[in-house]
Length: 418
Image 1 (cartoon, helix red, strand yellow):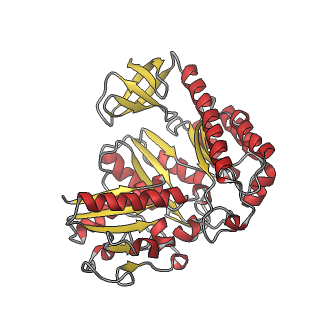
Image 2 (cartoon, helix red, strand yellow):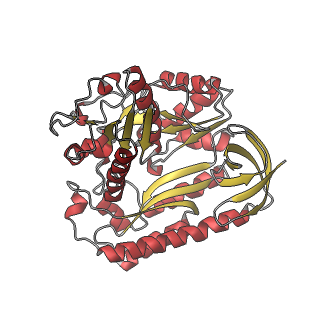
Image 3 (cartoon, helix red, strand yellow):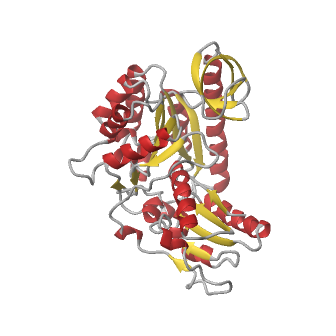
């Protein structure tokens, strides 16, 4: 065994996990398991603790290092686990020093905790990586942290305030990855559409996107991960309309479909804003599809409010739904609001997922006979431009194959290389 990395949560964590692996190797660490946790829900924290216990049983002689958002916000929870050798904060997990001089077995929780004040971090440096183990697309972190304080969210306390990577550094990293054979790059961040607020001249995400596509013409596909649509800038909308290499799939941080709940969440958009954005983006790019995060059972949510979330799936034309049963995070304002019963939250989450399944099946059915460029991943599977998973009869991992959709299963398309 060398170094195993277990990753939970967002695409940003995926990008950072590869840097963690690289820094741990540079520090001379071996026989180790690095666990990069997520704090977005209580279930994510539970799964991380479960994975740590499994990792210890499978690797009794390995060092187990726990980091990520949950480790930053609740270091004592992990330091108190006898399976854990070291807890590292989000500010340090991307440094070589974090993986040096790991305490001996049997030390106290205080001695094995290295978690600093994340709010004191003011910059995000680019960490150059050559590739991502086992993946055919590459992830580039362009932004970290968040200046907003949604009432349900603990992530700013795990990531700190918003900070951006300079445009030139991002372009250089994308070029490096393309030279190493990656055909698709995904831009990641905690609050992507706040990109550039802290940089000289305040370049926006749209300008960054267009710069990458201009400066790295060899890049076949550029993808943007989750965005806050209310902050979409004019250059980003222009890129949606004009840049064919910008993939026609966007994941939206919607969270709810009812205006009063959105206000109680301290979101910056209303229902009409989300619908308007989707309509405009689809007008500019007719093949655009949308995913979205939606929370079921937020405090004070009534049945009528919940039905507005159900309805927004159709009103926005959502295809890929990520449903989160509301989970109170200690220290957040929403945790002190009147709570919806857990049983009701589960029922509503199930109803939302069913609604999402209906929308997704409709999307699959509408794809019959259409031509796509499929990025082959592995085992005869790939992704279309809209990020829809498809079975495909030909192509090596990392190759982009022209194909025609010939059918579907419950969860995938079936495509034949053209």
